[in-house]
Image (cartoon, rainbow, N blue to C red; front, top):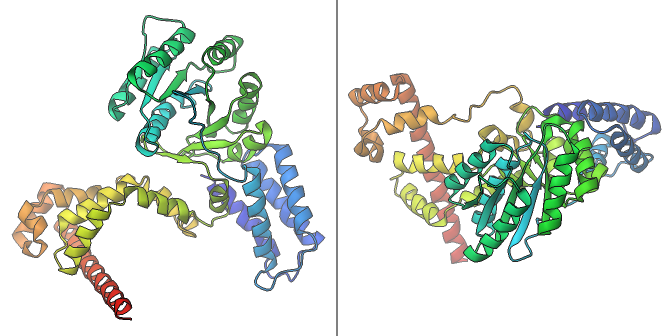
Length: 440
C-alpha cells in the first residue's frame, strides 16, 4: 500500500537536499514532482492541486529552523497537510441506540459482506457488544450463505429470511428479533450492483427511511481508485452516509482513494480493511497513514497490535522459564502463534520506520513460520521440552517427519540456542536493574 507514492515523494524531497533555504524556485520544482506523484497515485486532480498550493503557501520563505534542513521542513509541512487531507483525526463509529443499527452500502464486489463480518467481530471482541448480522441482499443467494458462514465462524448470530424478497421487511424484522434476543447491535448487509442504478438507490433509501439507522457506512474497494471517489459522491447524495470504509488496502492499490475521498464527500474514513482474515480491520488514523506514506513507519499501530495479543500471565510464565534457562520449543511455538495473530508479517514489518522501503522487493510469505512449525511439530513432547536431547538420529527423524533437511533442523536448533541465550541475558540484566532501583 502506497509504496509507489512513498518512493515518488521521497525523490521529490531530494531536490531540496543541501539547500540552505526554501525558495520559490526550489519549492516550485519540488511541488511539481509532488503533484505528479499524487496524480500518478490516482488522487483527484483538484485535490492534488489544492494540496500542493497549500503546501507552497506554508513553505515559501520559511527560514530553516536550527534543528531542521529544508528537506526535513518540507517533509513536515507535507506530513501535516496529508494528515489534514485525510481528516486530521480518527472518527469513531456511533454506537448509540438500543439496539445500535448499522447500515452497509456500496457496490457489489466492494467487500460489504466480508466487512460486515469483520465489524461484528470487532464489536464483539473489542467493544463488548452482542451483534446480530442481517442478510438483506435478496438478489444474490451466495451473499446470504456467505454471511451465515461468517456468523458460524465468529459465533455471531445471523438473521435471514431466504423466502422473503422484501429487504425493508427483513431489516425491520431483524431489529425486532434483536430486541427480543438481547442483541445490542444490528449490522445490515444490503444488496449491491456492478454499477449504480435507480432501483438499488431507491431500495437502500427505503431501508434507511424504515429503520432510521444510527450509522450508515459506505464500503468501497480502494483498488478502484477515482471510481471509488465518484461512487462515494453519488451514494452520499442519496444516503448522506456517516463514514467510509476502504477495503483491500493490502492489495496493489495506488492509494488515491484514501487521499481524495475525505475531501470530495466531506465524510470521514472510519475503517480500513487490510486482509482477508476476520481481524484484519483497523480504525483509520490520518496521522499514522501520513507517517506510512512518507516512509516513517507506524510504531503506534504496531504496539497496539502487540498489546492486543499480549497475555500478562503468559509473559510472566515465560520470563520465569527464561531466567531458569528452561525456555523450550513449546514456549517458542506459543510466541510464534501470538506473532501470527498480529497479522500479515510484511505489513507488520513495514510499520517499523525505514523497513517499508527495505522490504519493497522482498517477498515475505504469510506462512513464513511454516517450516519452523513443521520441524517443531515433528519433535516428540520430550524433545520439545529438552532441546539439548536432540542428537543425530533424532535430527534425521525430525527432518523426515517435517519434510525438511537435517541442515534446516540444525539451523533452527542453532538459532533457538542463540535466541535463548540472548533472552536469558536480557532477563537477568533487567532483574539486576530492578534490584538496584529497589535498593536505592
